[in-house]
Amino acid sequence: MKAIRGTRDILPDEVGYWQWVEATAREILAAAAYREIRTPIFEATELFERGIGEATDVVGKEMYTFVDRGDRSITLRPEGTAGAARSYIEKKLFAEGGVQRLWYVGPMFRYERPQQGRQRQFHQIGLELFGSDDPRADVETVAVATDILQALGLKNLTLLLNSVGEKDDRARYRQALVEYLTPYKEELDADSQDRLDRNPLRILDSKDEATKKIVADAPSILDFLGDNAKRHFDRVQMLLSELEISYQLDSRLVRGLDYYTHTAFEIQSADLGAQATVCGGGRYDGLVEELGGKPTPAVGWAIGLERLIILLQQLGERSAIVPDFYVVSRGEAAESQATVLAQKLRRSGFKVELDLSGSAFSKQFKRGDRSGAKACLVLGDAEAEAKTVQLKWLQTGEQKTLTQSELLSAEGELKVALNQ
Image 1: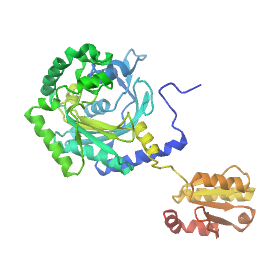
Image 2: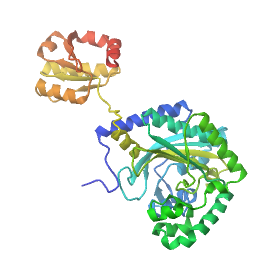
Image 3: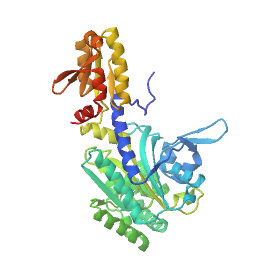
Image 4: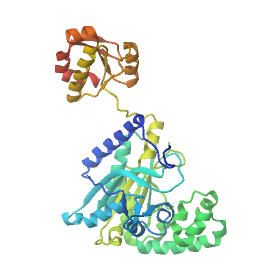
């Protein structure tokens, strides 16, 4: 048996990266007052049809949809924003007043052609801010995403920024874009020809080289912004500059979902190749109303974890979870004492791996070296009889004998030594 195409196992050697990324994000999001929300993995299909847009590729081609035993159309979530907005409405989070800052992490599902960093079951960390139309909210979300990526050690990042304006602005631009592209229809790639009537803005994101050349001279959406959208976008740019967050304007950046308004952005890495986007998002002021709630401005983003972790691995950013101590023992009495000692150290806050092989000391020491542990604790027959333990620091080779009680009472000194 094999895993289904487009899915993959995340094995223990890689899980350390996932835990590191999630822990880093959790800490930074908490510092900015974002609270975690956990929504269902599947929702009513209508939620995504209404929220994302029936003309989008996600809804039209990529969703995992089925009819359940209650004859209801159900879809595995292809993204997290629609579910968060549904929960915001259904659970009346707006009744708490003010701004609601939410975040989530988990699997999403899209039927796409699998490739490195893009799976049919993929994972995202997402952030949603409901209840503010202030440009400061847009900038806050960008700043939080930037903080997370920089805290993970990423450096070659580029923030691409655009405004897709308000509904009327987009309608005017859509008409101008269709008028420009129609004479070139036969020269566009097949997907773009199909999008010309359904969702022409998505043609701007085409990866087909011939289409990209045609699009290069297309009208810019920035020339179609109304006064309100211009003021909003100018303020976003000013605040980003004041935060010393550099950006590049990209009038072709429209994102793939219909609900976006005003600010749209992507954070890309120069170290990722073709699939360069690590984080993408923007403002979606009409989504809550479209789903049946009261008009509510909102802004958010999602970070794709598969691409991010590939990037961290390529750059050698290491977050592996390694033990503080690797416990080596041989002989019945020594193995019993080692088991007790390991558990007591764990309860004191240390990460401890206990070798369970019972093999020769030389083999256990080799495994201890491979584990990445800072130190080995060694118990043999002599140590078991004397209730002692050999503490060996693996980097320096320094070794000394302690009673087991001395070791357990030296918690503070050990933690200092481990952090050096």
